[in-house]
Figure 1: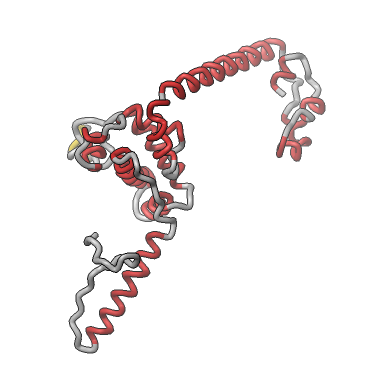
Figure 2: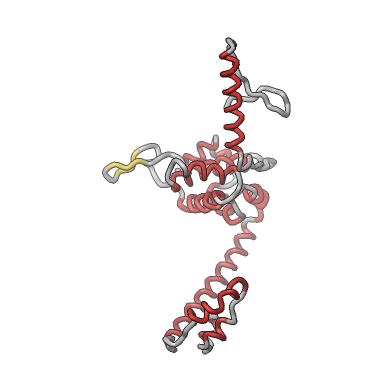
Length: 248
């Protein structure tokens, strides 16, 4: 439509007919919106310049994307590993690897990675001065942007990370919930990059409900036995193996 306007078309009915997809159901509203009675040649000239600028940057982005794909080929396996995490697409995976690398031996644990990224500790300010364990800096802004975008995307999915984000937003501001979700994502990323054979398995959107349901049942049974005069000690057992599991 905009290209037609720059080419000289001013008829709203003709312009509205260029609509595609769901916009076809809004022809009448488009005709009203595309009233070009106020449009001057100067406006059309500026519009043409704006469209040319968009085309230029679109071409630049496509060229850079192709270049990045070539440069990222040596780490294709790691990118595919991270791509399986909900909220983390190929571009986010490339961004994360570009900032933290793939050698996780430089971070003894996932907590070290989270601390280095300044993505977990709460920052307190007093009189304009930052206090707390994160007072020494704001972390890597590019990594932060990638984690923030991935966290928001994960929050909209029916997955463990999505459930975690939604659960946290019920008791804290959304930004803090986003940081906590990003913390979990970094922990997952550290585990995947630490082991080339590791495969991400989602715990499911109902993880918290199932865990709370099991704990509630166990607690009720213990109370019932205690009322009968028994002393009960509970130890978790893996249903698949029958062996005791580590305490969580």
